Image 1: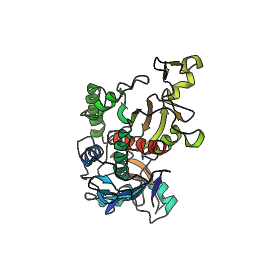
Image 2: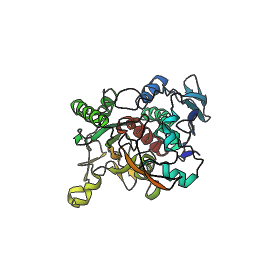
Image 3: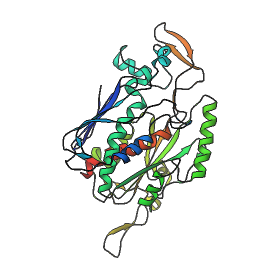
Image 4: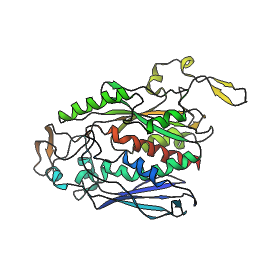
Length: 358
């Protein structure tokens, strides 16, 4: 089973959570593009497990081994292929789940779709583990987009009742995004971040999990990129971020709030600047109108569901005996997957944009 995305730039990821390795391939990049491997390694570390008590204790270095497409830090023009070794998996933690699917996990739907032989150890091909190769590819493309003046950055906007400051739709800047990359915790307000961490720790101590809202911004994308209807920027980003396990909702700009707005309040009025370029008095459309970029910052939020794997007893079914049963899930799981999803969202956003920009 493979996952393939893209038109001009095609990506393909493969593997299972508890298999020997996961990996990916990216095709379509020109020769001679400089890739900063240290920056890529730093980016991947943000997604890797086992860094803090707030994430899964599974220990994975997540260092990709490149087999083609890169030479001395530059792209060669051929497909970039890589693998990432799975070194710290404990399949025995999942042995009791073979016939008892976890509620709200893909255990049941995967079996219904692919049959009894589907590998669901650690979630198999449906695991968040598969976002590691997404981040390798996205981390490379983020660098490529920066060469073109485009910067992407995300932060935890909401965890439980705790809400971070939001991006300014009108004035989001490159500096605003760069500051986040050096933050100890992925929030604009670090005090809010500390409160979020305390809240997540409380949830974890109760053997439960909590969802999150992530906000992502893009600055530097010039006007005129995109297409109407099926191939618009919103369409592409939405499709791709919904590919991230656990994402259940996406909104751009004012999002669902537009349902309560008057046109006179929502419309982004335009004016000519002194240099002759077009400016906007507001950016409620978040930099995209008709599927095409306006040159204003792109800002969107996505809702992330709570981790389905929790230690609290839950009702489920036994597919073998056809009985109703209960389970208590063992293993190592994130109490809030939103934390490690930040670089994944940034990566998927980059993957979405390169098809329009290159």
